[in-house]
Length: 333
Ligand code: LMR
Image (cartoon, rainbow, N blue to C red; front, top):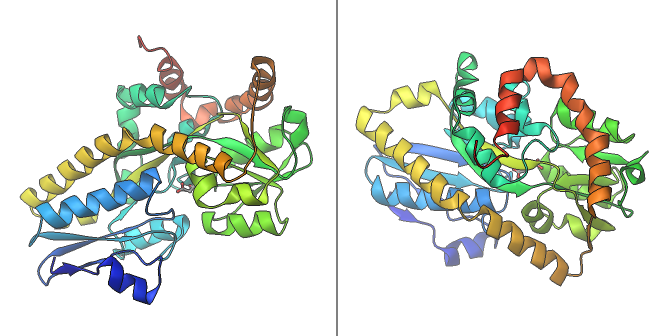
């Protein structure tokens, strides 16, 4: 890497422009396109740290360029761009792979993981590890996971009981399981790209959405919603994907060093995900947003309303995978 466009130079162009590494001839360029903010967000912080380590420790061999905030591709387009070799790394949410594999749907089942630790235990099981290769036949390779946090609902009216959601329209990610979950509430689901959500909420195209505190804060969704209800109904995480073609194009040393850095940085940054979401929650409150918590009976009503969708997807995900995920909620598993 020759140099990095400094913040001051970037600021002259556009204040939100990222510092994009300027790669040398002969270096393997690794373009990483994602849809979230660069700072204060688990995926954005991961991307920045990974680029910094690669550009420092693999200087002369490889060079990473990060394109945040959907400036290059949204999450559907980035999957095509990977296969075309236009980017080499992406990390869409696990909800967005339904067109390529159904097994990753386990992460989309409402209330399957109680917290980040449960998901981590699941990923260490044979069933969890098997998911990394679930898209091999279409040329994608999973390199691991980046955690965000638990998802919450927000809407343009208070949501306390699941019946409060009846008749509302919620933005969802491109997931049939999410659609079934919203329909189970007697509500309507609309699949929209992440960068379209704020406008859709603001203009009343949709009435509500579901996301983590970091996304709700960074995208300012709370500003155009009545409030957020802390349902903790699902863990939002990302699948780091590349292609077999890209990995095969690297010499052994470069590939090993790249994969080692991806592992090391994901372990480090996943340890920060909870605190980034706690901070975002505090920021929302400080900025005047409303967060409603549920008592045990109220939360159970949401579980009772949404959990029955599991049955619809058990066969395509695989009962063994779902059972392993559920068992991981027990710390002794
Ligand atoms: C969403 O579309 O809501 C999320 O997948 C965005 C993200 O990457 O966190």
